[in-house]
Length: 164
Image (cartoon, rainbow, N blue to C red):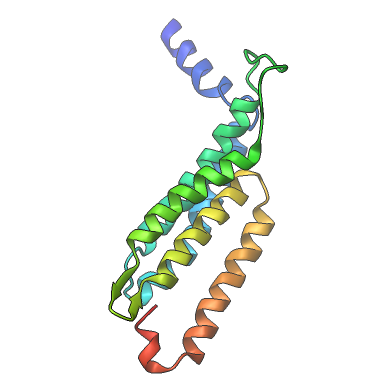
């Protein structure tokens, strides 16, 4: 069946820079670490919890993987192609910042949602790190971020605990 071969070729050969198993592993790592950050927010009944953080981390990882593939396309004229990986980071941070800003609410002098927004931003950075293949850095950052959230929540006065 020629259409099965066509499908096989389409799904297995489109991963020119990052092989499918590696891409899958990076996406799963991003989802898992995003879930760890989102779980902490979910546990505190904050806006933008588990699902939001997971999706942000997966999307950031996916954008990174796509950028790697675009930089490696054989059709590109290497003399005219400008590859700047920083553009991917800028695009992801802008998109996540837009989402994070939506989680911040102000009532006069009282501000809520800043920590949730920062957690979303962190999930984007963790996703970017997983996308580049630097899962150990993503693990370290997730662990450190989680420690900050837990330690600061324990040290924060009770009246401020609800403001994050």
